[in-house]
Length: 189
Ligand SMILES: Cc1cc2nc3c(=O)[nH]c(=O)nc-3n(C[C@H](O)[C@H](O)[C@H](O)COP(=O)(O)O)c2cc1C
View 1 (cartoon, rainbow, N blue to C red):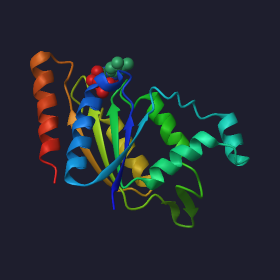
View 2: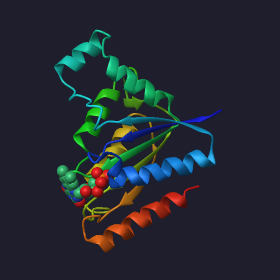
View 3: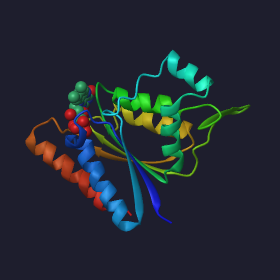
View 4: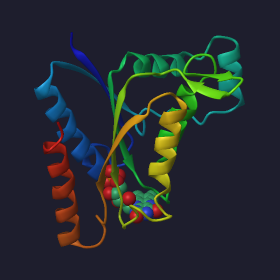
C-alpha cells in the first residue's frame, strides 16, 4: 500500500522559502524510498482564517467544512512533513491557525480522568524549521518546543526536527546551514 504523505507548507515565501526547499528534498527522498501519495496543503496561500467565534459555532453545528477537510487530511496521513519557519520567535500565524482547526475534542484528542489523550496515533512527523538566527538549545527555541508539545497533545510523539539555522547570518553561514540540513535529509533512514 502507498504511504500517504501530508506536506504542510507555511513559509510566506511559498516555494522559495528555505523551509520549503528542504521540505521538498525530504518529500523526494521519502517518495523514492517508498511508493507514496503526497497531499500538499499550503497554509500561507490557502488563507485558513483565524479560529474565532464563527469557527467554533460552525463546528458545534457540524458546518465546519474547512476544519473537517484539514482533519481528514491529517487522519489519512502516515507521514506529516511540516515546513515551519521561525517568524517572531514562533511559528507562522497561518500554521498556528492550521493547528487551531485540527485540534478538536472527541476527534483528534479527548479528555479523560487522567488528562487529555491524543487520538491521531501512530504517525511520523518531520518538522523542517528555518531560522535567521541561532536558537537550537537556547531558551529562544520556542517554536520547536511548541510543535513537539502540540503534536504530542494530538497523540503524535515521533517528531523529528531538521534545522536550518543562521540563514540570515551572511551568505556563507546561509549556504552551509542549508547544505547541512539537506545532508541530514539525505542521511535519513
Ligand atoms: C516576518 C519575519 C519574522 C522573522 N522572525 C525571526 C525570528 O524571530 N528569529 C529568527 O531567527 N529569524 C527570524 N526571521 C528570519 C526567518 O526565520 C528566515 O528568513 C527563514 O528563512 C524563514 O524560513 P522560510 O524561508 O522557510 O520562510 C524572520 C523572518 C520574517 C520574514
